[in-house]
Amino acid sequence: MSTKPPFALLPVIMPVMHEGVMSLRADGTIAQCNDVAARLIRLDDAARARRLVGTPMSEACRLRPLQQIVEEALVDGEAFRGEINNDSGHIRRVDVCVMPRLQKGKVTGVAILLMDRTEVWRLERVRQDFVANVSHELRTPIAAIRGWSETLATGDFGLPEFVTEQVVTINRNAERLTALVNDLLTLAKAESVGLERQFVEVRLRTLIDDVLTHQAQALDEKRMRVHVAVAAEVERIFSEPRALEYVLRNLTENAIKYSPADGEIYVTAEVRKKGRLRLSVRDTGMGIEKHHLPRLFERFYRVDKGRSRAVGGTGLGLAIVKHFASALGGDVRVYSEVGEGSEFVVRLPRESWQLPTPLGVPAVPEVEDFTVTGAQPTVRRTTPLE
Image (cartoon, rainbow, N blue to C red):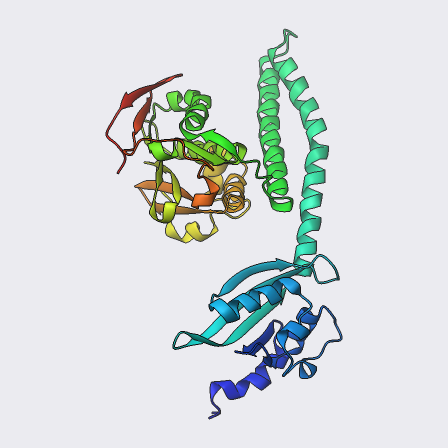
């Protein structure tokens, strides 16, 4: 067994790594570097690490966004993890991890890990364009199928009963195809261009009411009750209404689909620590086994394929929710126990919802509780949200 200390192995490991690895001294000069890192910071396939050791990072680095991050890390001692873009050259996307080394509160150096994601990004763009183009092309034939099947199913053509039943089946599956195509287009747009971020004032309670009104028939059929609690301080927010509507519609639809008859759904909106807006949709359904939770927001992932086909759905809704939450600067989480139901939580930072000017909301938040008993929800006043 080798008795070399871990750091003595770095010269052996670094040259064979697929990632770029480098370290800087406190004065910003390069202490260690492998050829992958040299290629990435120089934007040149011919760059070699041995020529950069001892060189100031400000002179060696042509990837300007990285240079700015490193300068801030050397001054403030703050770590960075994320993606940076280069608008020119063949290297377009780089994943970056910058970790300052601190000793007694002072920065003694910086460790940097770089991963070239350009090819992955290019292939992802090809996939997104393909999905978007195919989805657009599918819309026309699906519309024709739906139109003719609806005409045959509702018209007085004297068709045999078994033929009419088959036509209804054709129309039902054409509707499922339409939903799939629409979700594919929504996901492709969210992935390729992101959220347009046309932020306007949004009345959050009104938005939730509209979502529930459109789902009143499904709620009535399963005799489900919905309780809504919205803190007064987030009654009016500044956000992207289409993204919020999709998120709330998808999460409440899932809660209805995967809950038994006579179940209950709780929709809440409140402010938590650091001014973070917390939107929650909780149901009393069958719950989800823990080993499914890490993959729940993947495209086309289904917990139970048989059950999912029975209740409908495209397998894309939660993936789109995740993209919209991320585009708004937040995230989405799920908490679930088998037999006890599930809770989906979207968390948005203050800058993604707070109005640019104060609106004079009351100091004590008011909350209303919705009970949906039929086509129209009824309202009753309850205690303020804690």
